[in-house]
Length: 433
Image (tube, rainbow, N blue to C red; front, top):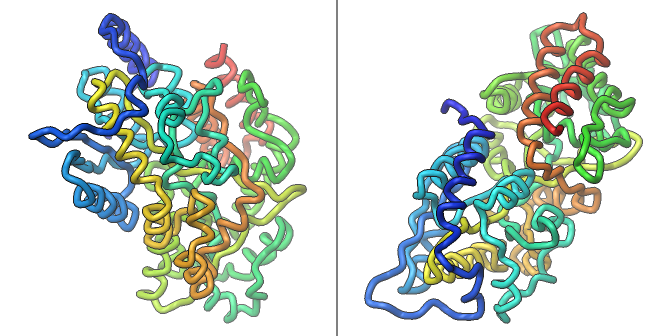
């Protein structure tokens, strides 16, 4: 899908908000009230990202919600990747036909909240005695608040993890404990690489992975106030140089473009790469594909640099703003259901996403799963190293600028790393100013 202009959508959305400001509705005024019975069901639309097992999970949970009560009916609609979902949501909001509930990838929570497209949920929580906010994993709450107000509840949350073909690792004599740090990561990649075109690692040039590596080097992509970028630093160069040097050596394949992630996954599944970086959300699907291809895989923490750091990811559920009181309360009931302990357990077992509730992680079902398939527990344990993602309104555009420049550097090895990162920083700073 052709990407919509972010700034244009923000402008249009603000005009729509201005036009609606005289409606006299109070945000969250019915937070303590339950949905009242009526002759007709309240109809809600829910938009979600990603297909395969993730899509099945969304459709299954919505079906469960519809069957659990007779007052609300939710229609689930697939909208593509996070970028596509966000662009479609912005366009639909500007046109006045946005879904009542949707997903915000966590780095975009601030963008949607500050532009007025999503509902402040603080009063809903304060007026609802059924929900226990202390039960949500604290490591996943950093991207839920904007200006100390709650705008989303953790739903399908993740961290990037390392996947390794252990059947292949045994064949080349590698320790199945996996690489613990950058040095060992390079050694494993070299051992997997052969003259037939197999590489140690095939990965996408992706902002999420770069956030992981720069944090491991001791840096960050933005300062704490999100007022300036900091990736054009010694730490940023160390992270990018690791990729570039391994690429030059032929042990790392860097994929770019809209299909970069899928290319990397296919390289791993088809035995053209020994290791793979991906979200824990891909775990169930990759286990299935590995079984079909006849190899064993295991999961590991991301290799550490100076520090053991990893960004959290995935999506929070949000309510779009400007809804009538009846639909507000219906949307809140749906969000509560989707993020409740039982549904969190189901989603984690079905996909591999992190259990966002402490009660879910400690449940008998999840403990039994971890005993049977320890690959599912790796991301949960790695959450101790988790970082929130930057939420500057401009960050989606900054991330695109940085990825574009890193791609340029990957295609042209003659460009110094310093020039690549400074070029991206100059464009990003102009955007921030």
